[in-house]
Picture 1 (cartoon, rainbow over the protein chains, first blue to last red):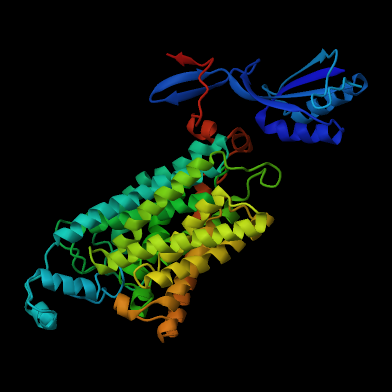
Picture 2 (cartoon, helix red, strand yellow):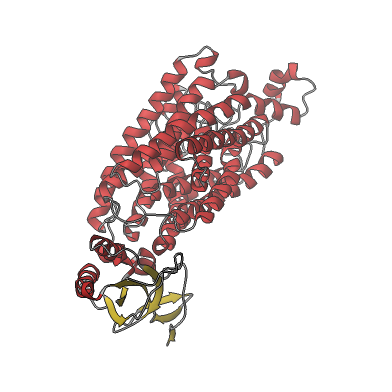
Length: 109
Length: 455
């Protein structure tokens, strides 16, 4: 199994979710996060003081899928989240050893 | 002391006159008329002035209240922009009112519009506003009180076009709208214009404020267009407690709006105060039952909306109807606005915060029911349908119809003109990023981690 962790623009989350549902991914975890990559943030002015806001709001979407599905899921996420501008985000993929269903205690299939 | 322009309800009516006579020391009411004829020229009344100072401040508070009501209903990325659309009216519309708006609304002029004699508040002094009102308060206070109405009416429109209208275009639009649309309509009804002469009853502005703003809102939706994601995104309120806070403060301020429209501390003001308390209570009860019946739950946003609908509906009727009829009016008004909300939600017409359902439908229902429930024994002006004067209902309908036609056409032309100077819409990027950051350079809920101070 693979854990696919995507950091995407907040306004692309719905597209990503729809793309994943279309592929039959049964569940996901979504978290509001802040961060930056190459996108350098924006300027804010409060009472005459200027600030450089470097950590921008993003949304992290985590899904766990079977190995053979991973490439297709990643492609779908990339397609759904891309605008072509700096700040589109990242996808990280890691190996998952086991998972357990808490209600049944069942180990993953 | 009366002139041709005192028929309207914003002016003192019989009760006020009698009170003034008593203050002047007439020994008995039977002698009131003779005493009035013999009395010296009226002067500023301390009690009336004290109440109207408070009432004007209450109505001014309604605009920040509206900011909370609207601000809570939008997504967090547009919270400040939405609230600023109300707050900015306190500035731009407040200024234009003093410069030209007041004069165009509240000077004799002709049937359609006032004149330029009070431009820049020329002659608006501490004496009575003689010639335009029989109110026994200083002219300055009369002007301020009327100004608070203009400010909130312009701000009401913003609910229709939140989350996508360009801020600069919006500010220019409402500033001009206050002069081109609000001032003439206020003149028709309160400044001695043609609707006043026809005998239309509008105690505190059901037609002038609510129908007028709602029609402008509809036209604005058509000219600006729907939000890009109106069909797909979850357009959920980001802060429902704000919505409830706003509704509560609106009710509080509305006592100044309605009871203050008697422009005196008298029985008429107390009657308007009473109906302003009872009508929204009735609306809230019926709305809650409709909510519970339809979706098995009494919603908080629904309750906030119900209060506003009830307040809108009682506005034209406030000092014209009995307390129980006011309560009944509020209960009746819940149904059409509730249906309008449900129907609107199923269409692609993106009147985002339902200005039409709350203010247009509620205002029209209130204006028409004023023509049903009005009692001459209460208002000293005219009876309604239930009290043997069916013609009043027709006059009410004409007033609403006139406001719809004029506000619709004039707003449309105005938006087209504004569109030639500033694009009406924010860019697609700004709309998707959120207007707080793109239009104002601020965020409503700041996460300061990682940010650095510059220079």
